[in-house]
Each structure stands twice: as structure tokens, then as C-alpha cells.
Image 1 (tube, rainbow, N blue to C red):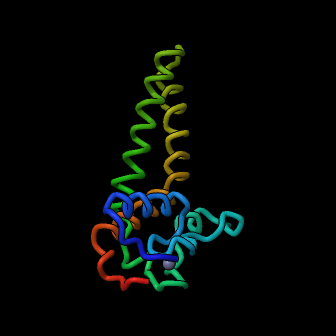
Image 2: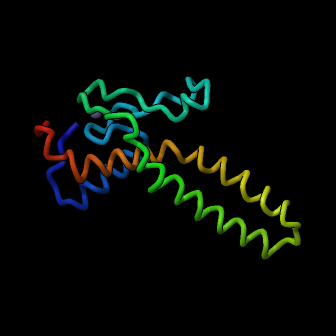
Length: 139
Ligand SMILES: [Zn+2]
């Protein structure tokens, strides 16, 4: 575990990389979420762990902390996916309006649930990069 003191781009890339692995943005070791094998409900899929046991970095800082994560990343990515899927289906198949809606909305809903963890992890990394990086002592 090293504190990165290199260029801002290197730090941004490092934090992004850690977020893709669902790891703590500070130490890059501890998981942000419960392992998939221990997820028993949809709620457990969305919940972050309280914080990092190695570096004490708090993941879920307050109620509603991750709302922006959903608006910025989850919903926008799902909307882009849905638009692409809609026009692809419309271009290649002759479908009724209801079929087109169902074949678009169901995969978009599943996609949004699947990327929810990545959305939270990227938001956490971004928050750490822009607002909290200087709060941490060098390790
Ligand atoms: Zn950590």
C-alpha cells in the first residue's frame, strides 16, 4: 500500500481502476461491497460496507450520499444503453410498440441494477479524488 504522489492523471486513473474492482479508493485493498457470494437480497446488492477496515475511510458518509452517483452514472449509462438498444431493435426487427418497449425496458432495468455497484464505486473514487485526497496523511 502506497500513497500515490504522482501526477493527477495517475491518481485519477488509479482511483478509477480501484473503483472498477470495487476496492477502497484510498488503500485499494479492502472491498467496498459484500462479496457477490454473500448477497442474499437486492438491498444487499446495493449496500456498501460501512468503511474500510484498513484505512478507516468511510464509504457511506450520510443518508443520500450516493444519490448523485445514481443520477450521474447509473441512470445516464442505463439511458444511453436503452436508447442504443431501442434503435438497434427498431432498425433490425419489425416489432409492435409494446414489444419494443418491453424488449427495451426489461434489459435496461437489469442493466441499471448490474452497474449500480460500479456507479457507487466510481462516485466514491471521484469524491476521494476531488474532495478528500488531501485529508489523508501519506501512508
Ligand atoms: Zn482502505
